[in-house]
Image 1 (cartoon, rainbow, N blue to C red):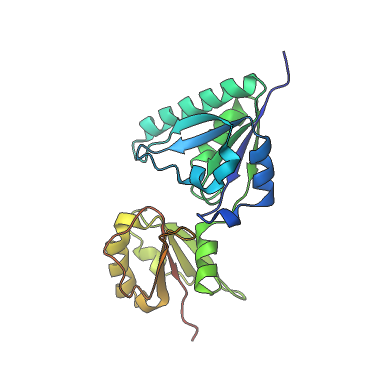
Image 2: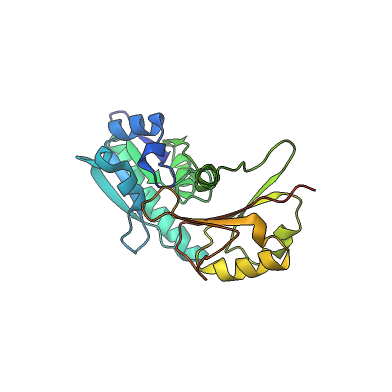
Length: 231
């Protein structure tokens, strides 16, 4: 039997193709197969970011539904891992492309663990995160000196406790939770310290410092940064 292939989880950044790292480009160039997450909406954002690096590549579309049913999620991840393992067994190199960084709220790591547990080699290629890109667009630091940084998925239960933490805040995947998040920020007197960045690095990027003019809800690719005022 020939040599088995390697799985790479490749972070492609938040949206701007120029933020794709040199290592990501190298891995994508040599990969035999692109594994592409598919959430049912037909929006292959990660595929659009890598552009012509996808040309001529075999493609594996991976169903990764955005649901909270753990059993169904596990079954979906099992199926993707099995499909990837089949390709690795054939000696093919597989690059699973994922937005931002694979280690930050990414579907890829669920696949990574399963494939590694099957005995195959799996590696992670880091990428630029949405909140780092958003901070760059705002021209502001995420944290300085001894300041702490707390990263929270906006959809995670009640975020009131996060407001009380002595740290600058990042709320990821704000989307439909934006109205509720705005209320919590206002209650904590943090609204003026917050900025919403939608679709960072994409053509339809929008920035709302202090939430001025911000919509009541937004899309999946939304991040809110809160930098506490120094006293």
